[in-house]
Image 1 (cartoon, chains in turn purple, red):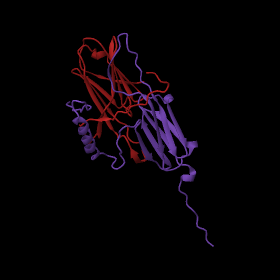
Image 2 (cartoon, chains in turn cyan, blue; image 1 turned 30 degrees about the vertical axis):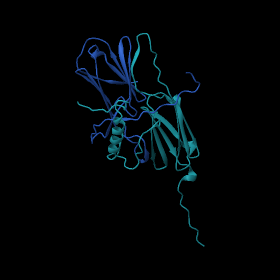
Image 3 (cartoon, rainbow over the protein chains, first blue to last red; image 1 turned 90 degrees about the horizontal axis):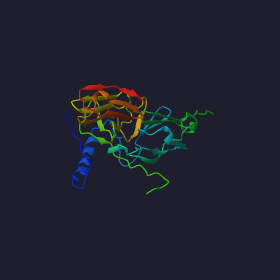
Image 4 (cartoon, each protein chain N blue to C red; image 1 turned 120 degrees about the horizontal axis):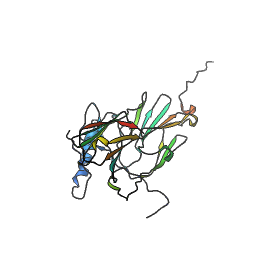
Amino acid sequence: MATFTLTRPTALNPWLGLMNELRRDLNSAFRPHDGVFKGTRGVYPLVNLHESEDGYVLTAELPGVSPDHITVSVEGSTVTLSGERKIEYSVGKGTAIHRRERQSGSFRRAFELPAEIDLEHARASHKNGVLTLTLPKAASAKPRQIAIETR
Amino acid sequence: MTTNESREIQPREKEVLLTEDPRTGVVFRPDVDILEQSDAFVIYADMPGASEETVDIQLEKGVLSLHARLAQTPPNVRTLYAEYRDGSYFREFRLSEDIDAAGVSARMKDGVLELRLPKSAEKKPRRIEVQAA
């Protein structure tokens, strides 16, 4: 199978950066989630936010990050994700690293959701390197029908 | 340089391959680390959302190819904001002739594929089953 991959821009080839941007713009013109896809530059982890019947579902791509190294906190309508991605290899004694693309380090992101979260029923799960937060809206943030009094 | 606080992660943008298949959606190129040990090469590939059931590894004519479908958006939700997309992963590597094709093993843990390629002199096409970690 023939594949064609653009490599990273270098001092020798400054046009690749521009080509990548053009490619990104072209790709974004044909994407499935029209209007909600915001691009992926300079943040970690990448997240998607969905609305469900009773609240929000936030998913974050955290491959290779053990749940022990992820901290999720919720306060009011603010959700904070922080932690550390540790990738360590012991080099020496016949071991060499030929390629290193996977990044490690600490991360922290905070999100302000449109409504307050019911802390009692918020849940977090981690599967296949994707963290999923299920965040039901607080009762005070849910729509209520108001009875009309007649006199 | 040593500090008490760990270095902040420097995010890499997801690389999108130019091949865009309307059936699979966007095709991403997974980030990999490649290590050489005394008896084997080890490849780690970041494939968040992929599981041992969705990963397909082929080794044929000295070319190792990784392919994985991505998990879909959770059901019964409406997406408000998206920084990543559903799609699939693809990457291939040309192996040197001293890899023992029969001894290649793979396992998947937390969205990371670990491939072990033992060193040897054999070379014949085969399919590799992925085991759950």
